[in-house]
Structure formats: C-alpha cells, structure tokens
Image (cartoon, rainbow, N blue to C red; front, side, top):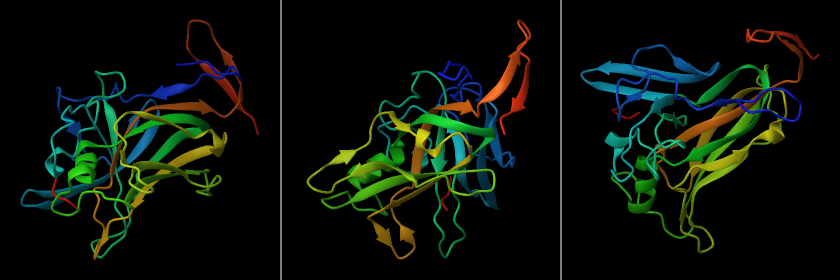
Amino acid sequence: MFGCATGVQAAVVDFNELPLPSTNTYWNGSDGSGGFTSNGQFFSNNYTDYGGGYVSWAGFGYSNVDAPNTAGWENQYAVYQPGTDRSGNGNFALGYYVAESFFGPEVKPRLTLSAPSEVQDLYINNTAYAALSLRDGDGFSAPFTDGDWFRLRIAGLDELLNPLGGEIEVYMADYRAGKTFILQEWTQVNLSSFGPSVKHLEFRMDGSQVGDFGLTIPTYFALDDIQVVPEPRVALLFAGTGVFLTLSRRRRKA
C-alpha cells in the first residue's frame, strides 16, 4: 500500500497473492470461473473447451512462466524481457484480445474495480510469443519491417460503461519513420487522465499486419503493478482493527 496526497491509500494490484502450483505455471480460466480477483479487483476471462484437447481462452490470465526467448504459441504465457514480473519473483497478468471475426465476437480483456476509483498507473510489457513473432515472424505474420506497428489501446469506463475521455495508446512495436522498436521491458503507463470515477478498464489491440481473418499479430500483452486510488471518501480507521467506516462523496489451441 502507498499513501497519496488526499490521504486515501492506494492499493497496488501485483497478482502475487494468486495461487499457482509451482514455478513456470499459469492460470488461463480452465476452471470455468469466468475470471479472477486480485486485491479486490476483478479480471474477466473467457475459456472454451471444444473437446479432443482443443481449448481457447481470452481476456485475462496470470502466470509466473519465465521463458523470454522461446518463440511460438505454446509459450503464450511468458512475458518478454526480463522474463519475470516487475519484482523478479512473482506473478504477472496476461491479456489476450480477440477481435470480432468470422470465428466469433470480439473479446476485450476487462478489469472491473471494486468501487469507482482513479487508476493512477500500471505497467505493460510484451509477451514472449508476441515480441518474437514481431521480431522474427512466424507461420501467421512476417517479421516487422518499415511502416509496421502494433498498439495496445486502453479505455476507462464509468459504472454505466460510458467512456471517460479518449483511449490511452501504448505502442508495443513501432517500425515507422525509421524506428525498429519492440517493447521489451516493464513500462509505466499513466492513466490518471481518466479521473476518479473509473469502474472498468477495457483493453484492445490493433496493428499494421492484417489478413483475411483480421490481425495476424499475436494480440497478447503482459500487465503488472496496477495502482488504484479509491474515490475520495470520508473514512474513519479504527486503530488496530483495519476496519473502515466510509461515506461516499457524492482462437487458438492452448
């Protein structure tokens, strides 16, 4: 927990309390729960078992897989460099965006906060699967060349799903204007412009390489250390109890 100027405590969602059976493991929604909660905040998940060993997931999962140099969809649960979460020894979240297509409807990873809040910032990185596909190409995408780009777009929504200003954009790769950039470190993204009434964050991705069935780039991202400050409240903390009385101010095979 961190203090802030208003005196309200900021909670950092770091996913480290979430259960995983051992190192180099992950959760992708196979329990059918529809999502998970970390530090009071809910992360959506869509998981489908088609039978015969074929399954798909979208939305959010979480992982501690450390395999930053292994290419391919079988390594879809690893973050790119440095290969670990920001602390070096914990969990991180994974987002997988699915665009609307012949195969089905759009699935946006959605974070739903326990109460309207200000999301001050969070940290974003590429997954190993996405970054190595961007750099080297794979069976679906060519290696990035001049003019290519890949972008994450974050929308802040209120309780009625109304947008709170414009989307915030994070370039996961940018080969325009002579650049050869692929995001390969945990990068802080400031979301304070959405204000103190954020109830949901939605994530979607787009890019320059598009085929007959939509974007050919693996639409994954990694997420860690989300700093959330509740809407300003009148709060009484009973010493030693931790109890607050508050008054509100107003497609792949995986």
